[in-house]
Length: 237
Image (tube, rainbow, N blue to C red; front, side, top):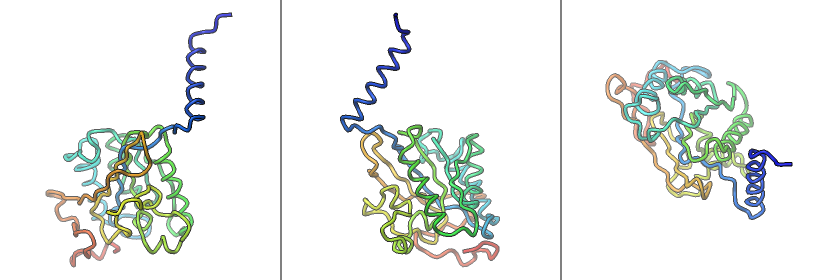
């Protein structure tokens, strides 16, 4: 009996997959770039303050949205995924996700939940980022909680575990990456990989958010410097 052409093609594909696996060739699922940023300024444990809401709009209009004035972070590409972990990060990502008509993929951790939940959610997200074939050779944007981006103290408290994106995205393999996210809401961490060869980043840079009017009043303290003296009391530090 003559088998249909689709059956022959499927059989060939399966054989190639098995052969690659047996010879130790990895099935690649590594993004070309990951853009990590902290959520915007917050009013309380679950909502952004007015400045934070303004920053969420600025992020979409100037850097991350479909019609961003400076599209260099995304290199003109549609994000493979926009991911978030807490209510603050979801609210920060909302304007950007809406502009692309993309869902926000959440690794949810609610206000008041303990650090183990945040640790677990961060691990799950990092596993997806470095293991989802749909995101291979594309750009993923991560809106995250700052201690779980990088915190020397948190890493000490969880010695023997990998709990921060600095560890889980293999940024700890690079000398140039800060060990702790400072008191800043105005930076991107841009992580580039060679997606066909390794999960170890090949390049890392920090990019400061710079905005024209009407967003030029957003806090723009240099990395590691204190928030401005006129930082509003309606926003938590």
